[in-house]
Image 1: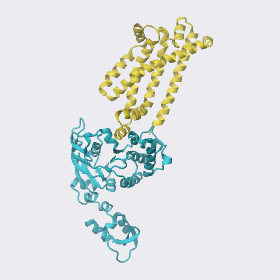
Image 2: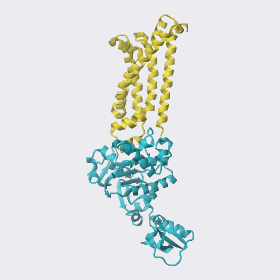
Image 3: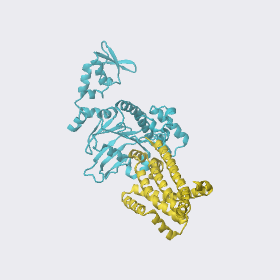
Length: 207
Length: 316
């Protein structure tokens, strides 16, 4: 642990970079996954191709996908963000679709019967009531992204993967640990935080 | 500004669900007069809920027309139409992430009432359904009992003074004691409310207790449409007779009022009963030992009633 204690500022910076990578990856992932999840929940005919394609991406090993991204985007921040976003699709699309479908029929019937337009119903009733189930998926995707983002060390994207990658190359275990321990702690913290949010939401919407 | 209530008219209405092998509602034609309390009665699967749901276009007829007032419901914007029609369902369907006040204000805020008007209306409605506004306004549905939830459900449905109120087995999920008190409440509210009420139930006593008129249904068709008393005294066919157990005279006595069966004061009386009570309650008094009941109207003796008068009333 001597490496970590002598490199606190550097490690802190790598941790921040790591969080940036994960946040950018998830943001991009959500932009794509939320509409796809919505359409999959609404139209059964669309669900199969959407889930299928996301599933295919998910089965590609992440390192292979990263290599492919580097071929087209070069080294650095973006290929990793793209891989994170692509990987999260499978979990997030399913979470969004399942969450929307988990809204009880009685509330939907009441909302429509009272005269809400489809958009009003979605914004005022469906999304709030779908939140806990969706947050469960977001939590899984976040933890997975924190792990996958350590591949950033291979492609110059920065983040805690740098320490892991260089430590492994130099067979310098202390530096590897300086990357992997904060990464693990970050994953645990993110998991706990999102679990809390999930529970707070679930409590709010218990009928 | 209360709007006049609207009649509801079904003209050859047929509903068939996709993939079903028979019509859920099969060529129903009937007119529900403005302001009436009408109960659709029948076993599950008879099409009563589906018929109800054609009024606010949650069910769409494949044939026939539903008129709300003089207007073909199919010609109206469904969202506008629904905002003018109150809707209460068995599962209540309160929105769990909203307070009681927010639930009740859903339709008024969709109609863009101003905030002061909505706040005043919420308190007025909570009082109407016998819930103390200061205690209940800020509560969440999960903090309410089943009966309280359905009271809020009723308040939400009538919040924007709808011309028509649809109630789909609203008390099916609450226990018997709560159901009886909710029925009394709805009966009371109905008289104060300026709305045509269509109420679905499979509970015969509930129908008899609430209805001005009952629509008896089977297999998507109307078997009889008449007042509770006429259905009990002259059922249209064996099905209606069996469903309502029309041979049960006690049930019929529950629909007749003491003041309609009494005769003029003569001799001595040994107990008193209010003229608005049912003959069923009078019978109860006779079985408990009374021979001649004095009938009171607004506190004054208006007539007398004995057991023979009850029997005469049944023959009438």
